Length: 147
Ligand SMILES: [Zn+2]
Image 1 (tube, rainbow, N blue to C red):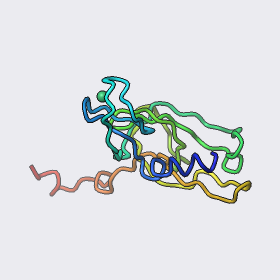
Image 2 (image 1 turned 180 degrees about the horizontal axis):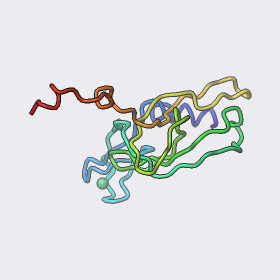
Image 3 (image 1 turned 30 degrees about the horizontal axis):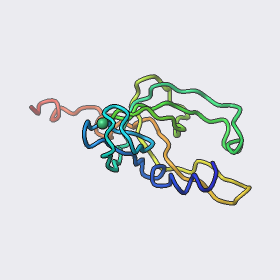
């Protein structure tokens, strides 16, 4: 990614920040200034929850320029809980059997290191949603008796 573009989109990449239409409530990522549905220009900053589901994924063994140092890696299309479909690297997937519609969550990680400019690009990735600890424990008689 080019440095000026990264600086312009930094907030979006760090915080998964997009926009939301004040008129029809549709949300967008990356941010837009005009709603394509209702033509409204009243869009406000919207920070996405980071929750989503895996729409599709692919293992990349031959990385494009700038990503060679991290290959092989897995990239996915994620359907955010608020609606938008975005592409992102998947992380923490070793030993995990990925499947369509599995729950994923956003995490901030290093995306890319540029030897050309010496800067490091951080941004969002998605990882399989880990079950809460309580859900993975065997139920006790007390828990089973609770209403
Ligand atoms: Zn709208």
